[in-house]
Length: 335
Image (cartoon, rainbow, N blue to C red; front, side, top):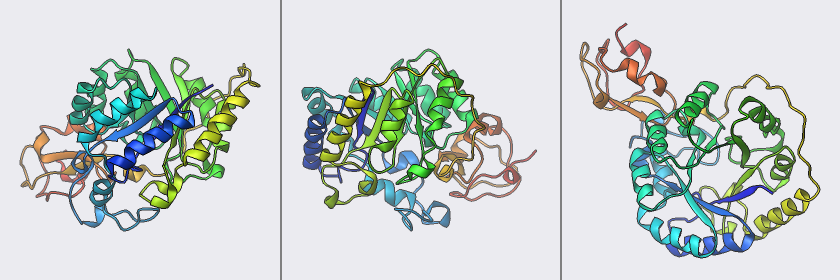
């Protein structure tokens, strides 16, 4: 039977009482754990109305990234109380941090597991901060590249690691859920556990994932869909989540380990990659000025240079005058 995680995400609607009621419902549903997200808008992006930062389509069309994260984040002062409540109900409580500040904060709460969102797998500074905790790590693979994933696995080489196959569409469709990748991950990385972070509707995908050997299932949980919220459209309520847990328990009785290996398939282009981090210009600078960390920000969206290039960029000079809040391009840097 997989370890089942109920993702609270933004379904607290920034109402502490709603968050508490939701955790009680998670416990009743049969989940093993409840997962939070620990960030502030400033952990993820820049406060700007420039077109770079506007979401072009989907559930959050026309919002800026700052507006979305301001609406969705969970106040940090709630964490201690919600962790204690979850523990009293027999749940494992843990979180996804999105900054080194968030990691330091969660360590004060003795956070037992660290989840890394797929958009963050290329954020090396964050990964190194998590690695210092020596805690188990769960990584979603949704939009991350093979290069980013293998870099992360090197950083976490001494950790207990679980990789979650994930389709980063909200909601995702079964047609495009590509669950065969669970087997691909198992074959490519036999040293880690593999599971599913699911954004489809219903529990067909988790059920199939379990038959493929998924050891972890993560689904978004909401107390009442009628309350709305940025993640309500692809979240399960208590009745649906309880039904999923019940079906998975029953199905697990009939399953045997699959002895067959499935050969890895070529990695496809990641849908939703535009929300990964990239390098942006954080402060104005003149042509010829030496580039320092203060000139750059590793933020969403993914319109600038790869964050993995940061160390090689520091110390070079700007090839032209640059303006803050614009993505950093190769043409901005002297060869």
